[in-house]
Length: 329
Image (cartoon, rainbow, N blue to C red):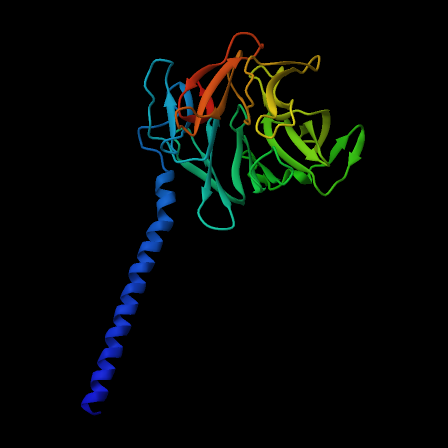
């Protein structure tokens, strides 16, 4: 081998080493990027559900925080979530994963906010609920579109039963009855589940052919029936006698809804004192008060407001810079 050939071979070897080294660095950086969301998902060891207060997603950090009381400062350190809810011995944290197509991780957490199960589904995080016992969990993602105010959306709603480990991947499989007859349509969408205390009965929204329905479901009988039209994102009161929901009251796409409460015994409804359009699944902070998120003021992404459930009084700012409220006792 002459000198020129040896020099050329040396150049090729050096180039290969540089390329491989760069690839290794790139791989390490990529691996770290993949690990970051998982690391951020963990709560600080001292942050648990053991203390009473309103738990919520902090708009500034994306992590779950706690508001101990009206005048007390918030306590930070919870997991990173796009949607959050907790009840009984369990919490549910929905996180949007990076990349295309959109995917969501549903993380089931215990009272110490440690992960006990993980489910990955398609779509963007939208709604999260846990039954009072903590045994049933439900989540909704937007498969296409990102707003209920347009017709160009599709949802995917799941139910996880921790008693059996069974996962209902899509509630569209549940037989639906509308006006006393079995209903079939290719555009049926479920969202906004809320559970009764018996861990069997549930309420949800169904959309099909331009109409939305409040439905009541029975998990043991594997059935659901429409109760009425125009009632979205139901939320069952702690005493199981009332449903908070958002009702479409306008064709204005910027302000179509108003929060209402439905008395289940009489099927009579009344509006809340809150007159602004609320695109949220309201949460019962106690038997008499509802909490919900609205676009934030002063540049904040969102704020949590509350209003009396009986329609009296006025709404008030409860947690600046927050969303996904849930009261934990």
